[in-house]
Length: 499
Ligand SMILES: Cc1cc2nc3c(=O)[nH]c(=O)nc-3n(C[C@H](O)[C@H](O)[C@H](O)COP(=O)(O)OP(=O)(O)OC[C@H]3O[C@@H](n4cnc5c(N)ncnc54)[C@H](O)[C@@H]3O)c2cc1C
Ligand code: FES
Ligand code: FES
Image 1 (tube, helix red, strand yellow):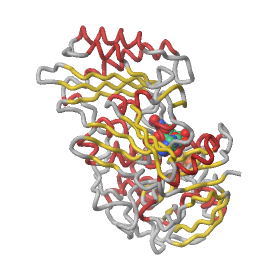
Image 2 (tube, helix red, strand yellow; image 1 turned 90 degrees about the vertical axis):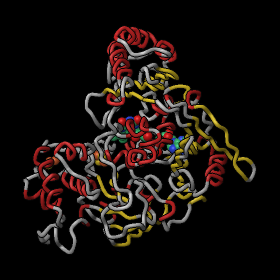
Image 3 (cartoon, helix red, strand yellow; image 1 turned 60 degrees about the horizontal axis):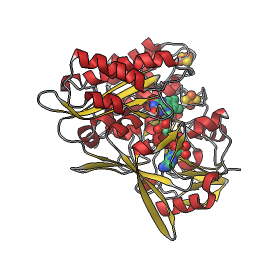
Image 4 (spheres, helix red, strand yellow; image 1 turned 60 degrees about the vertical axis):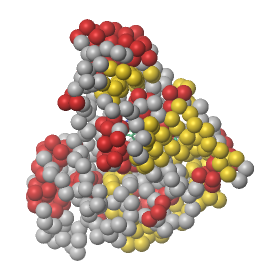
């Protein structure tokens, strides 16, 4: 049976890794680990070590010369970080293109690197920016750290130079010189919740005459590892962008990649597409106006809105958080079953859970709250959406054991004193419910987005629920309801009838 560890320091974590070696599986957001476990693609590990409460791993440090990102920082945190947006917009652009909001709230940069997929989205800008990573291992009573250039990190699909006893702790990027621009093209069958057929990133310094220098080209999902396009970069170096150059670049790019046939596309299709995407990415360097907008998410007001519940300041804005705000004790001894206490819709709940139990099982089977639905069990459909410490997550992928001391809101907790929330009211008023299976997840996701106090256009509302699938395909009514709820400003007035 799997033993769970949840250390709070790097020293404790690497000690566990030194003891258990390859038998230990690290987990951060769990959006790869839990998908593989839930689907049976991987066997339960002997040891599961959560990195989310390790001090320092969730820090985001932006200085005048460099950015250091803790391995357990989420894509959501990157996307909403104003300092990152200013210092390294390449990371914000790509964070906004990953999955949907719930996954972005859970998934970490360290997990993206740890998963070592050739199509890992965040690897592309990090490689273009020449990132290095820090790997920590146990050394006597302390910790030894080695630094590895990300370009030397990956050795094959799912493979890297990281030893089983090492923990990825930090990602470091020196700020590029003035004039640096980054163009990114990700191609999939739909705009969100999609692993890329392929992606291309091109970073370069562009001078006043439009001449390119320090060019780096990165191809994703066209080789066993993310691929540095050194020949394509050499072709661009020192050049200004012309139609002839774009033609030459496309030819070079097609010869440089090594795609394979797989479920997302044939090798031939990918090779052809590489040429098209590299041209588009290079064209984005031509002028700041060509630069990719950073998602459609407006900047959030860091100080004001948070999760909208009346407990501002006593929890983190992070999705799969923990650390400072949590009352939970470190688990460094390893437990197969752990008794956790967390707040569920304002009430304390104490329950013994196994290491791999997902939060949804506790909500439905232990607490008997059946509003949270199990759909895919793989993070794709959003029917299991709950609000954890102020942000929405997929409870099918969230480890219950890591919820000790935390705050969970389900659809049953949304009404206040028997009065429906404005989002619930709007769904009723606009007929945004057919079979109702997706509805609790849709409502909680819409509710979370509305807490941010931003203007909600129909386009924005549709993006806000991109991580939620409606099998009855009633999206028009749902979008109308979300826009109406945003406009209503006030809390609902409909009394909840008890059955
Ligand atoms: C519906 C869905 C959509 C997705 N869409 C995208 C997408 O658009 N783009 C994309 O790139 N990915 C996507 N993913 C994959 C996944 O979300 C990312 O790879 C994510 O970055 C994983 O982060 P995590 O924290 O959840 O990792 P986890 O699942 O916790 O871990 C992933 C791997 O990293 C290892 N690991 C975690 N932390 C560390 C550490 N500190 N040191 C060493 N190893 C570590 C784990 O052992 C595991 O092997 C998607 C996943 C789902 C379920
Ligand atoms: S996303 Fe959790 S059940 Fe589909
Ligand atoms: S209303 Fe049926 S799944 Fe959305």
